[in-house]
Structure formats: C-alpha cells, structure tokens
Length: 347
Ligand code: MRU
Image (cartoon, rainbow, N blue to C red; front, top):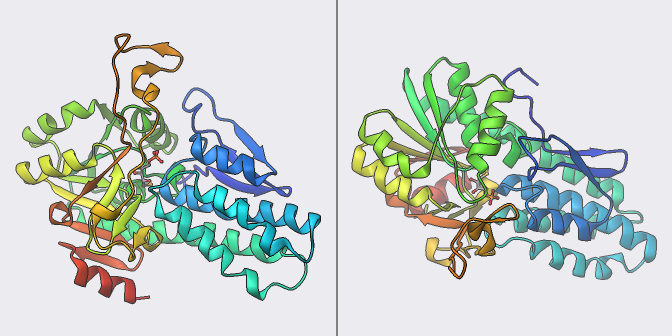
C-alpha cells in the first residue's frame, strides 16, 4: 500500500467479515465483525458499508457466510436453502448494480462445487475484492491522464477507498492526479443528508495527506462561476447501456451546472457498475430512504414539526452531460450506446 492509499473498509479475518463502521466516521474508526449473512444484509441497508463496489464486495463475503451456515445445516441441500439468503442480500439496497452483479458472480461458482463450498466461495469473494482494487488503480491512471496540470477538482459524495475495495473510483482518479502533481485543489461537496463528503471524503483524503476544501452543495455553481473548478469527478451506482449515470442525489445538478459553466464532467466506475440490461437511465431503480434522514440530524429534529420530506438518494445524469466515463477497460468520451457496447466487449 502506498502512502496515498491507506484506507481499507472491508476485510476477511479469522473466518469472519470485518467492516469499518462508516456511520461513526470521522469521530470514531472502529470495525464490526460479521458471522451471519442476515447481519450483513442489515449492514448494507443501514449504511455501515456503502458505495456501490463496497456493497458488492460485502455481499460476496455475505454469500460465503451464508454458504458456511447452510452447508453446516444441510450438506446436500445448501444450494436450495441458500436462495432465501441471496434474496435477502439482494433486497438490501436497490440502486447499486454491483450488489446484484456480485451475488450473480458468486452463484456462478455453485455448480462446480463438490462438498464444502466455503473455500471455493471465499476465493471468489477475495478475487472480487482484489480485482476491484486493481480496477480502481487502472481507472486512476486513465482518469488522471485526462486532467490538465494545475487543475481544481470537485467531487460529490464519497467514491473513494471507503466506497470500494480500496483506492476508490473518483478518489482513485484524484489520488493518481495528485501523485502526478496535476492537482491544485480538491473540493468536496458536503453531500446531504448523510454527509458522505464532509464525513467520509474529507476524512479519507486527509488520512492520505491530500488537502481538501469542503463546500455546501449549494455553493457548487458559484464555485464554477468563479472559474475555480476544471473537472468534476464522481463515481456511479449504475451506468445504463446508453451511458446515463445514476449516482448520489445532487450529481445531476452538478452536471447541468458544469455544462453551463464549461467545466468538464468525469464519471469513474468499474465495468461491474455497468448494467447492459437497462437501456437508459429511466429504467434504473432509484432508492428513496426514510424522511427522517432529512427531518432529523442524528436523533435531533431539525425541521419544523409537521413538515414532510422527499428523500430520493440517487439521481440520473443523462449521458449527454458526461464528458468521459472511465472504466478499467478504457475511457469513453461523450458516451452513447455504441461506445459503451464497444467498451464492454473490450474484455
Ligand atoms: O448512499 P451511498 O453512500 O451508498 O452512495 C454512494 C454513491 O453515490 C457513490 O458515489 C457511488 O456508489 C460510487 S462509489 C465508488
């Protein structure tokens, strides 16, 4: 691990899954240990772990835990009894395609297993984890190549090591661009209501010695208007076959404003985030979470009593507003269905 890449949110240690509890950061850095798949599904839903690739990797280890339990209960019938565990895992969050991708990839191993499935499935989950880190490093190089010297970059939410196996997608590009000496300043949107930018992106970058300046998301257009941003770099929870991009709520308004101000807009995401089964962004399911996330701050009410709230936690940016999608297989500039298909075929 180099000094600009020190954060790892997921580990398998002593036969259990350890997750850094992201709800407590930055005040407290502590892990929770998981032995049961039901608890892993709760951890994904409750945001102990979050970010599309990290959710997928966690689910892969969840499948290992499920298989260990089901095989112990019923060595010949575990393939049937594990189905309800997989359904429960898949129901944890709806938007990040990496969750479904990882479960499917783990299921793809089932047929070839003879006897105890744990070792084979653990190897597959560890491969998924390591491949994700390698993909992020590659995207870091490719994305950083697009960025000119002396650039200021604005990012949204947390698409960093904390949201992946390690290194990060958008923050991987930022790490690589910083290492190449190209970055003047990194700005992070605070990202309401979960404050992934203020709590997680700022913490993660500072852990690795990368200075970061926080802004309220309402300040982003004004920052662009003043010529202080050259690139917006974000991650994604799901990219449709035509290049439309689902990401944390607020990404779309950044892309609209970026186009107006002549600021470049980059999406960095591994191919496990590309869903060739959805033709365009309209078919991507958008998670809506509890209104209390907006009405309260922790346990404290902040909104006027009686106010209702609408809390969609992702939005879709049309491909036409995206300058570049960067995956581990290459860069797609001005994405459209034809270019995305060609990139996906380029295995
Ligand atoms: O609700 P979250 O925190 O899981 O949302 C995360 C994001 O929107 C990230 O930008 C996305 O998953 C890409 S992570 C590399």
